Length: 270
Image (cartoon, rainbow, N blue to C red; front, side, top):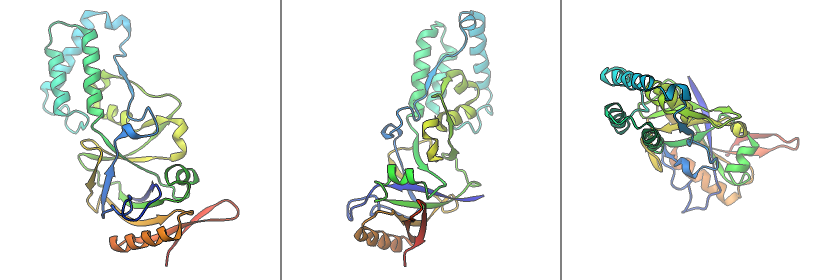
């Protein structure tokens, strides 16, 4: 299924701006530590096993044996994109450790999982071009621009995933056992959970599991840039810069127009 998604960008200055640096189908994956949401991709991870079980040596031993069985099965983690070699090594060290110092391992496993999450790069997209708050917050009150992509949900890649964000009234609290035993669900919860205060964004994010702070070229059957859209308050000289950039990239140039009744629509720039 194909869908149009949009990314909002701040005001541009010719020669030194995000518009000038655009290349066809090359997408910048941001470092989430720069996001304005202090909890984004920074969930609270700890051992959530109830005390009555965590104090039971037989239970803790059984948990290590269960993970050892999974690691011994070559197919158990097939397609589990969250588990990389470094995290796998840490799991192996945990099941092989004979000191059973659970407090030490609690810190060590949380750190290892946090290190894995810190590798992720993110592109924030939305299906709504006429979202006034998005233009205000991410495109300098309409002085910036939007990028339209046509994405195909049927072409997920090994390292890059489309993920609709789920909004909740609470920041997610995750158990590191989830990363061990249900890594597929764990990955989804980590990369696609945000506080409900951000629900107006209706975010669909593009997540690269092995790259951040860099541009990555995407296959055209995965995501294709189709338009550049000038904000409703973009100065005319910068609109000309946008038109020239769109022509160079071979995509359509459009602009947003506000209406007297408070709505917005886009139109092609001729």
